[in-house]
Length: 303
Image (cartoon, rainbow, N blue to C red; front, side, top):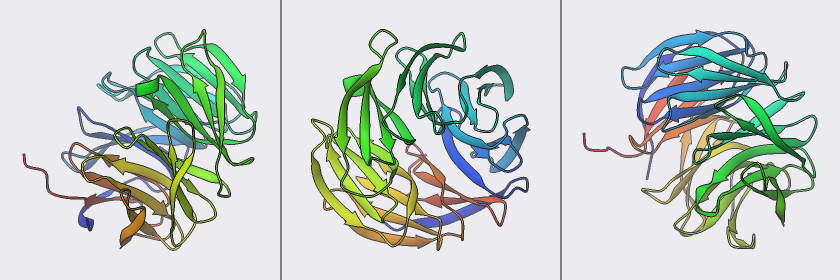
């Protein structure tokens, strides 16, 4: 289904954005603002920027801890993980966890956070209530996007080279690599899952999006896209995968039932990252040169 530009929201100036995530109960959008080293909080319901939190140098990974009212952000330059209370938008905890933390994934059943370090090539498990590290393991290469798969109680971590998905058992006592699934595309980057189809979707640097069975890691299909992708999100309502391409600046919609491009939306040069709100069917594309969030509707949702 075509995306419709609904509005834009101004943000503080800064050269680039990295990951972002939406806290669904409140509609708050949390953004890693890389160059100024800040975390931005936007109220998507009112369409206003609310808060800038400093002290997150080379801000990279962001994940919300829904249904709790917390978010976590990775400061890649200092090795810190910040815990943010979204009720008053303040920093309430901090842990130095490695050299360059980047990818984050949240296990809501245990209130634990996986942190993937792109310099040490490690995955560390944090008890987010106490902000202490409880387990760690070595990955076979540089990690990228990470997810928690609740249905099988495990983490999935994209590894750039060798190209694969590392499957890690969740929980501090079992935390270790249980499987390595090769990906037949260069540079796995963005990662999303569809529990209903039992599929993972991997967007790779070589311009391929590959669907992989969550039951054993076998490739099920692939689709070429017009550029190198970064962030992806899956829309379960429409069975669509959205893929951001920073150059030339596109949001590509993939029909995951047929693994084909169904729509292409022009965004802005450098807009390689976005967040998705499945409840409100909105995409929040981050445009660095214009210092704004572009709000796209995937379809109208009744109030």
